[in-house]
Image (cartoon, rainbow over all chains, first blue to last red; front, side, top):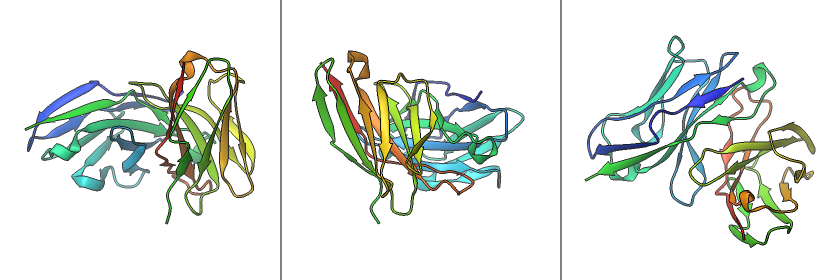
Length: 116
Length: 114
């Protein structure tokens, strides 16, 4: 069964500092992995996705994530935090068409706070 | 190009009542999935519709039902509302034949049950 674990429900960083949000997954088949961002009172916006091509994935707003199969991880990073990055971030896993399971399994989210 | 739209934005209902939420998928998408996001939690998969049929279902009771129309839009119905049904309901659309099955989310409907 698929599952996602996001370590750290709350993360605080100073403006300009490195952002690191952790995501570990479990999947019985090669997974598809996604990071979404959610601003208050809004839906989910796709930041980036891993679809078995390059292991280092670049997304919008300067974010990137690296797929590490040996560690079953897909951590999200950004070199320099901006105040506008403050939001809730969700990691999700899907087995896609490989197993006929199309649903996303989400982690519990990490709330990022950026300090001035 | 309009993205995924949902209506209404907010809804307040009383326990025991029934509610219908609506979703229009992104242009070109043929599959709609519904998720429930309780406060402080990640979204939980309710079910998915493709070709007007429920194709996959999460761990939700039969009080949750849905429908997909020929134009690919969808409805989520919840009967006999409980206080615990209070949540943000998210609709996501996608194109089924795409291998990655990337989903695009709407802004959600905030349901409050009193």
